[in-house]
Image (cartoon, rainbow over all chains, first blue to last red):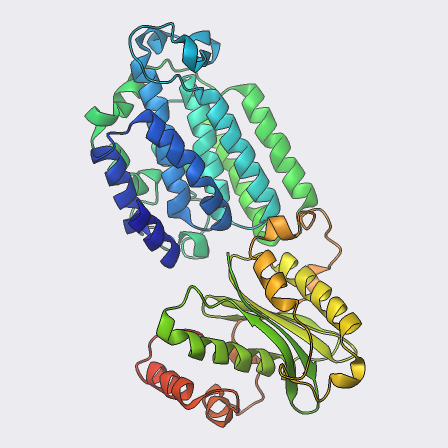
Length: 249
Length: 198
């Protein structure tokens, strides 16, 4: 892990280093929940100091996705219900009422909410970094995906509406299909381990994403547009608004 | 996001005089560090010489951004950062440093000073503190006093030069670059490889 951190520090957007880190988590740590949580908190500062490092943020997306799918897997009771309304997810660690597993209960909605705040803070502090806006899309998607809000469509996460090659943040992304799946080769390739794609099929689907969540995002976009003086920032904010619009289609 | 150097200079006529500087070359490999430092000094001086009084500018060179502020009284500051570092904070830093410097060092010492003769030790501290922009300047995202449209943006070092001038010539004539650095520069240019600093 130290090697990965060292390599990541030396070369910007080091896909290899971060992929290797994911591999270590999958094969050596077996995606242990405690370790995932530790990684989430220990990479937070690094990410905040490397705001155009797409691979670093992709790593956080991987961690959040893994935690989400593991929570869904462990709590088989919750399969049929939207996770938001299920209090069992919020059980404190020392009162593990559900006897199925000894693992610590994790509050996924809270984690995602924290990630949104983290992203908001960075977007406000460092205007004009596409990576941050891209990250926000992923987190928003995860939040509303939990409640079965959208049909499973990973391709919409890409920043395909920005012209290829103009953003230095994304220069390392393969020029093939510019979708989130291109970056998630390691995360999704072994779906039986992740149980991710199977879960998405089981979650209920409603036609439109949660309107409260959408409203908050639109308010955020308005606030950014009204105060920002950075041309790029305005462009990303508008692209994000357009993307949100595509979700209800 | 990273800061590599912070320098205070006096824009003399025709040359710029280095008065005080701080460097962070820890991210460079051990054997490159001296050369990198020399190149940063060379670059800072060149930028100040080619910038007019009362101006702020950002000069892009490969993955580095050099921010310069030349005051009307000819005191100038240059900070060399990476492209992630927010330029707003960089200019706040320059303003602060020059203000502090002018209070601590007599004006009379500026035109003929050098790091050896000038007593000013705060730059290392500033450089280190400002490595984390949010800790150093928490209000920077709120206070947008600086009109960003007035900052001149140069996409390469070349755009600072006069017609016919070449960086290669300036490098070989430079007094701040050691023989090793000049040789390193020549080799890198010949190989057309990405020269570490220039």
